[in-house]
Amino acid sequence: MTGTFIGIGVGPGDPELITVKAVKALNEADVICVPKSHADKASMALGMVKQILHDRQTPVEILELVFPMSKENLNVKRLWAKNASIVAAKAKTGKVLAFITLGDPMLYSTFLYLHQNVKELYPEVTLKIIPGVTSVTAAAASTQLPLALKDEVVAIIPSDLEPLIIEDTAKHADTLVFMKCANRVKMLIPNLARAGFSEGSTVALVKRCTLPEEKVLVGKLADMQSWDITEDYFSVAIVKRNPMTINSKKVSTH
Ligand SMILES: C[S@@+](CC[C@H](N)C(=O)[O-])C[C@H]1O[C@@H](n2cnc3c(N)ncnc32)[C@H](O)[C@@H]1O
Image (cartoon, rainbow, N blue to C red; front, side, top):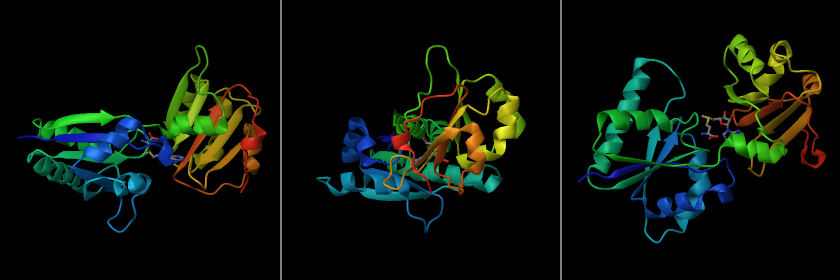
């Protein structure tokens, strides 16, 4: 008997942005797999589904899986394989395991490494994905800046990428979405200028999108130099090549 391993996107933070399909799967799963970067650190994804699990008719097993944030080294690979074997061992007893992940599982999610390992090492396990609202689309909604119109090109960029690669990518895009410590955009202004973005290009920074502590800053690229922004991993920046009308009611300051 083989079970099922489902990657569930639980959205950007607001529990009301979890899909109906995700809620159904969370209610029916035998095991909820929770990603953690450290064993002693609380899981943000688990906090977001707390009420759903609390309201369940039947109790559910919570399985914490520790995932290091580091990209390289052999030990990390071993840890992925070990986590995959834990998942597969439970799935093989016929259980349904649901792995909760922020935003969407298919966009820069740690889930993808686990999914890859289970797919390769345990092909007998049925794999499913339930998409979620990404922080990219949620940030666009919070800033009320469209990601794309007509034939515009959107580039999604990890902010810690080599600046020259960012510059090159920016040359071909109308909208840039920066993820992973998006406050770094401030340091990339010269690169964006060389890519044809102007002082009047619109920039928005959204921290802790859709959460009660959400902060939104919108202005011109030239203004960004004076923004007092602290580093926050949970931030997304949107830069629009063409100046946009700003919804000033949405802008908050630190
Ligand atoms: C590992 S990626 C995960 C992306 C996620 N799978 C998604 O679909 O949005 C983590 C990055 O997503 C962005 N992010 C996720 N949730 C966020 C939120 N509530 N507010 C702002 N940025 C968020 C940040 O850029 C963060 O560095």
